[in-house]
Image (cartoon, rainbow, N blue to C red):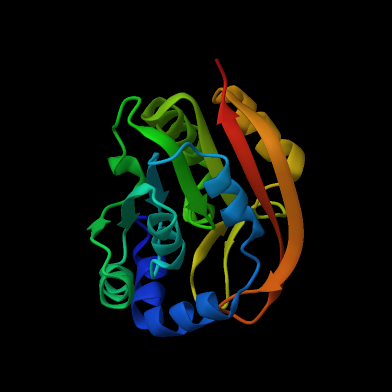
Length: 199
């Protein structure tokens, strides 16, 4: 979903490795909670769907899912493995108005520069229906930097993230934290937040 060329090139080269890593991950609790919090047949946007595993789970649960990713190689995997039609688009392509009951951005927006995050959150809030749900996964920490593979990351402290969500009109419903090794093999702390668009 990022427009950073170096980050997209990494995901293009390592799409199969990333898909295999996603298949090994079994912490589905945040995804299950997101699905259960939505009404039947809700319309959802998976913003940065990667190889499509989460989007496929949402489809199986009866949700109407739009899947987006900026890496064509990821879109191809999602199509091959799960039969998903993925729109190849970046974060700033989102221009919907009260269309989605839920937006799922699981470890995708962490590739956007911090200066762009308020604008992305505003567009997400606008795209959600009244009291729509937003799932956001990020790595925690401070600053911006590239990992050993060359991917760009923006890191957030929990209080910083809470302030950004509040400014964009979201109420945090739940949060979970942990550590996990990513594609670069480095254990890193993360936070997952489920929030609701305020009235």
